[in-house]
Length: 205
Image (tube, rainbow, N blue to C red; front, side, top):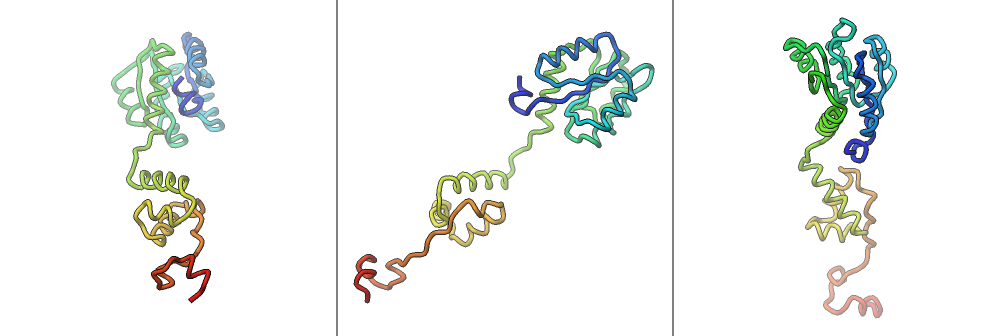
């Protein structure tokens, strides 16, 4: 199941008093969702005030009362939740209001559990997906380099940067502790000689 395997189990609240609700609960449960079911608007409001949800499926007209105005309240409390209305009493005005107030979709019953599961999965992926930015690509590349090389000098050489610039960049992105500073050691240029470094160190000036 896409939701369970990739994004974790989805907690869905079904708000529905119809005879088909139990079948939806069983079907969504079989698809890998964790489903809670309430039959009244009051029960839904109480549940939403105390429990976490990543998806809500509502009958738009419940016991003669519209539930469309719950959409903005759900969206305010759970910004990334998937909100779907599935109704036996569709109307253009109701559909427009639902979408305007933050619903992701408005369906006309009958709706199968497999159709609803696919919709919930797709909408959740859409809401949780974040596009790559230049900064995020840079951070991932730096993270890869710091995992591959153990010293600041080696990483700087690979990236074509001086050590000071790389150090500042790592600190900016919270990767500073990933690399150990290069131990200081004399080199031929520092000693100002053309003969091998080892010889200069051994025999002195």
